[in-house]
Length: 304
Ligand code: SF4
Image 1: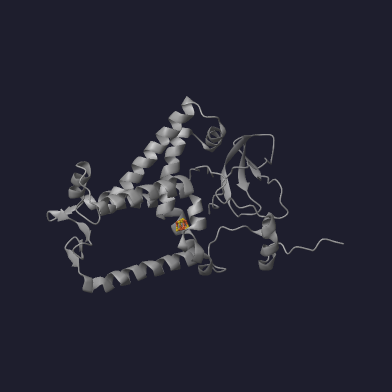
Image 2: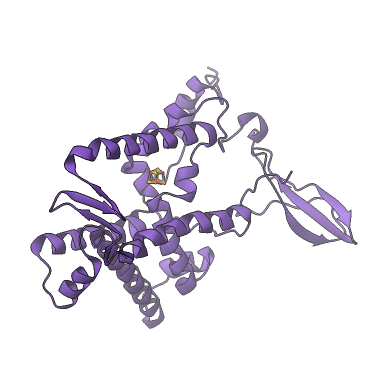
């Protein structure tokens, strides 16, 4: 009896294809390669917005904290503006506007918020940047993870986790000081006079940041994020969506890079048959007009 034919690439085919899919559900740590380029630079710029989160609360205005979300006294102070409970509709409208903007951006350009702005992405990016500085590139990190424990491995791991914890504590402090005077809070913290609520918030944010950015990483998107649950309904055929193109990608096999001769060198562009992306930076000595695609290459958009 012949095997039933699978509908590859169609919507119904997805259900039969998924039997062969392998999804990392957190069993192994993903050590992604950090590739330089235009979009990486853009990511650094957009992620630097979060510096406001860390340092904005220290800004003073007319002798007071410039932005103070004084929940205890039910007043929000933003420079000269004071928002009272009866003005909360303005905050609601602002949040609604931000939500609609997020939906519109997702509909046009897909997961740009996730890739360039989300706090989970930004903190994971910071944590993995530190990891790379201490433990090395992804290959070295995989080897280190698999290696038996010794003095060097302990030194590297302890250093990394100490820095991660310091950032997590600073994240907790930075969150809390938006809700009370930053300098009073630091005084209470350093003199061990935090209230139970202040201490609980600090502890929750410290552990949350440490766990989500240090360990859960992309699994947060898979298991916890509500935005990830509804993204699919915002995309249509016009959405710029990096996705697998079955017509270009099948049948699978090793890709080759078309190349051209320039300055006595072969300049090769990585061109995937599945993604319309090119990375025109590979240079090889003369002698071959095609090169096997490296397995860890990252796709970059075609330069116009
Ligand atoms: S899916 Fe959610 S947690 Fe993940 S990057 Fe997007 S917004 Fe952030």
